[in-house]
Length: 184
Image (cartoon, rainbow, N blue to C red):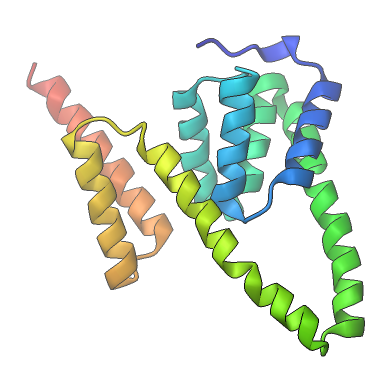
C-alpha cells in the first residue's frame, strides 16, 4: 500500500488525532491499536508494515502511543504533520487529566471514587490484550512466533528491559539478513 502523503491536509491530521486522543483509552497498546485501525485500515494512510516499523522505532523512546501518532503525521506531512498529530493527540489527555486531577485532589478520599478507579483496571488489561491479539494475528511463520515467545519469556520471567529486547531483535535480524545475503 502506498503512502497518501501530501494528499492528507493538516486539518484532517489534526481532526483524526484529536478524535484518537479523545477516544483512545487504556494506555499504550490500546491506543496504538486504535491508531493502527484508523490510519492503516480505515483511512489507508500508511501500510501495515510501515506502521509496524514506526511502532518499533517509537518503542525506543518512551511513550510509544504518542510516538506512533507522531510517526504517522511525519510520514504524511513531514515535521509539521508530526507536530500537528502529536499536539492533537495530547490535547484531550492534557485537558482531561488536568480536570480529573483537580477533582481527584478535592475528592480523593471518597470511597466511591476509590471503587470507581479500581474497577477500571480489568478493562484496561482487556484492551491491551485485544491489541496484542490483533497484532499477533498478523505474525506469520515459525521464526517470528519464536522471537515473540522468547521476548515474552525474557520480559515476564527475567525482567529483561523492553529496549534491550528491541536492540537484541534488531541485531538478530541484521545478522540473519547478512547471513542470507552472503550465502545466496
